[in-house]
Image (cartoon, rainbow, N blue to C red; front, side, top):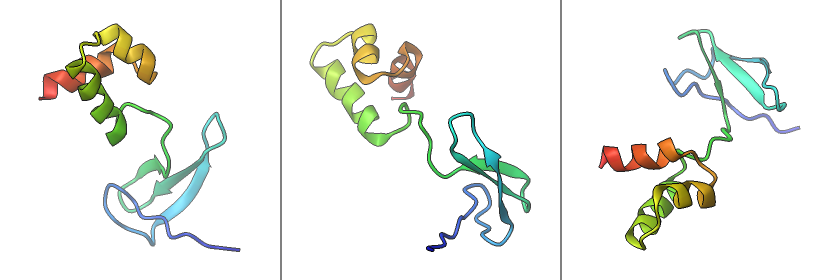
Length: 87
């Protein structure tokens, strides 16, 4: 059996991280008892992935609209709009 060291993304502690149940889709949830935050090691949300952000910019340069970009990349229209507001 392989043990993986889980590090808290908020405070960086590894000693105080314990398993903390599962999400609705069965993904393991963890809790850091040092900073009292819970987190997942893998997220299913596509909007924050670097390749999606790159594709949003590329599709805009090629003339795709907000709705078309959101539909193709399977993210919300608000995610596409938010990407352009940050730049």
